[in-house]
Every structure is written in C-alpha cells, then in structure tokens.
Length: 325
Image 1 (tube, rainbow, N blue to C red):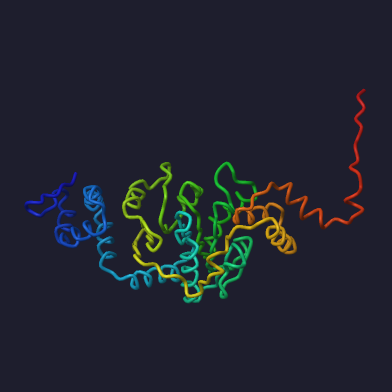
Image 2: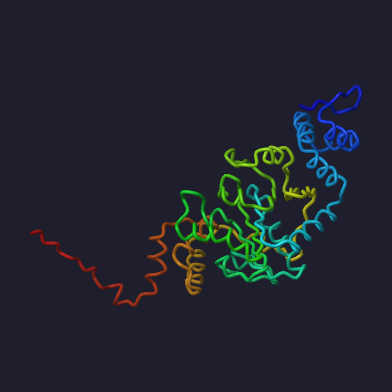
C-alpha cells in the first residue's frame, strides 16, 4: 500500500518506488493538478507506486512537446514490423484522421501503404484493397471501420471470421495493421488481446470483460475528453498528444467519406462495386457504413438480377413434384 504524507512531502511504501517518486515529486504533483481529476489523485499515486516505470514514462511524456511525441510515434511505425495498432474512439473523435496520419508517417518513412476502405479515403500515396492479405510484405495497412467490416464474436460471418483470423497471421510477414473501430465493445476481443499498440481517441466506454485491467483503469483516467487529444500506448512507452494534427493529405472529401447515402446513391455506388467484382455481402457492408441498410435479398434483386438476360428473368421457376410411395 502507498500513502502520501502531505506534511513531510514524501511517499511511503516500497523503498525503490518511494525514492523514484520523491525525486520527481514536484513534477508528479504539478501533473496531478493540471491533468488528473482530483478524485483520481490517490488512484494515480497508487499506480505510480505499484508500477514506477509507468510513472516515469508518464512524467517524461508530460514534459515533452507534441512535436517530440509525434516524432517518437513515427519512429515506432517505421522501425517496427508485424504490429497491430488498434485505434478506439467514439463517433466523430477523429479516429480515421489519426489512422491516416499514421499511414502518412509510414509513407514518409519509405513504407508501402494500403487502405481497406472507400476509394475516397485513400490518400494519393496509398492503394485501395479489399482484402488485407493482398498487401505486400513489410507494408502498412489501414483497416477502417473494422467492427462493421469484419463484425465481432457471434455475429461474424464465416468469411469475415477467416479474414480476422488471417490478420493476426499476416502481421508475421512484416506488415503493420492499423485497425480503426468505434468502441471497445465493438472491437473483437482477439484484436484487443493481440494489439501491440493501443490508440485512444475520445472514448465513450470500455468493455469490462477485457484483460489488462490495470491498463484499462489507467486509460479510463488518462483518456482524451475532446477530439484533439490522443493517447498512444505501447508496452515500452506511451505518449499523450494534446493537439493532434490532421494529416497533410487530409481533405474535406476524406472527412465526409461516410456521408449518408440515399437509395439512388446506394444503387449507383453498388453498380460501381459490382463492376469491381464485389459480392452482395461486401456491397451491403459498404452501404451500412453510409447508414443505408437493406437486407441481402434487396441487393440481389436490385443489382444482380440486372445482370441477367431478360429471357432468364422472365423464365418461370420450375417446380419438382414429390411422389410418395
């Protein structure tokens, strides 16, 4: 147990932890009053005592500039391979923009870049792909709106489940995957457990069943509360960016990539995807990202039957008579 004696100005607890905290006391206290809700002070102090290396990282981050932190993230993306970087955040928190910023950093570092998502959100230096497995080795792949594209847990279709399982295997070929999803409850547990990096934008909730509970409690306390803030967590370091910049390649068009489709737009986009050999299920998923929700049967009727010759459409359905013995 740790306690802080306000009269003597010392932490009482394990000797090594007390020595470290005492040496950085003024920085710790300034950090608490500037960055942490007073009701959480005691819990943060306990976290520092129990895991002083985390406390040291937090203080180093507190004293660094946003520019220094972004450069540290860039080195992490470029120099390390085989990572899954999971970006969590509420709707409108800037998740896609930050994912694109990471992709831009990778490009500037000489990496080939891909986007699993809409053509409109793919920056000029990257390629759009439908399957993460099609990316070359030692590349960086941005998978946007992953919870919708690949589902979660019991709701996952077989194809989506296979793709998700492949993702954990593919990173061993040197690929880095940036996976963007809206909330921790939407993210598949495997993503969370296997994530090498966690990026937290403004967040609404966290699923209680996840592992790494001490980390989750820390994130609950330290998470950003506005769209400008970003928490980037790795096993060996973490940074909190107060004012997160937009990517240089960001545009109005990219920011509205998931604008709402009406039926006319959905059918127009669906026909374009059909020409690119998208399946009915893939078209349905893309439409859902634009708040246009229809069952598979609707898409088959509207799009796939358009491709059939008129004589096939008009041909009556044959029936088979079953004769019982």
